[in-house]
Length: 227
Image 1: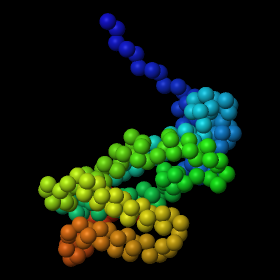
Image 2: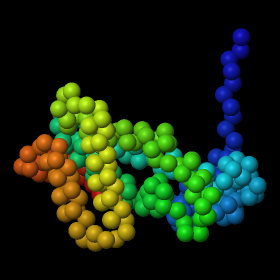
Image 3: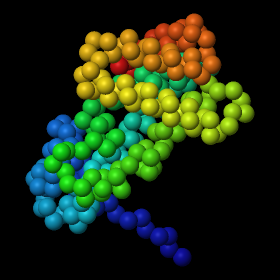
Image 4: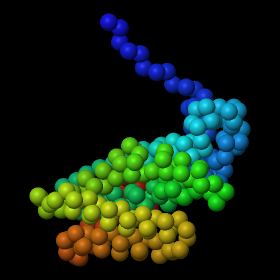
């Protein structure tokens, strides 16, 4: 009995996806229109619709790639025997990714062009929702696993999920404020205070949390990940 053959990659679809990623990361989601994407990929507008169905679905593909890279950035900080330091390293890696890829990051979290109509926004929500996307869930799981390590053994999974959501909300809010330019030169100080407060809220003493942040900052500098 012959093995079932894997479907062959569609080179046109791949080119469109790569072109869409470049448009978003270099020019922002405002540049992601069917016409401009077709021009960038050297193909027709019909090819966009036949491969993806809508520009929202194309944006969703870009989001999925973004979340895969984002999750890898969080995982790349590695681990140690100090879970508080590890969690802070992830927070710093999060901020580095977001502020280093502002146009991609804002799309990943559903910012779209004012020119998009309701059906396009709905399509993006269907195809690029971070809590529905496989890569988005995987990225959040990396953070949830780090939060689990700093909690007491036997902590209810629901409580870990809530704490993970608080951690995500904190660094996401900080990232968006930084991207918008609202923190100016205070980014590093605010990031330090926010991550220390998260650790203290989780039961770490302030002195230990401050030492953990300093250790995390040194580690991130050593591996070239300091935001």
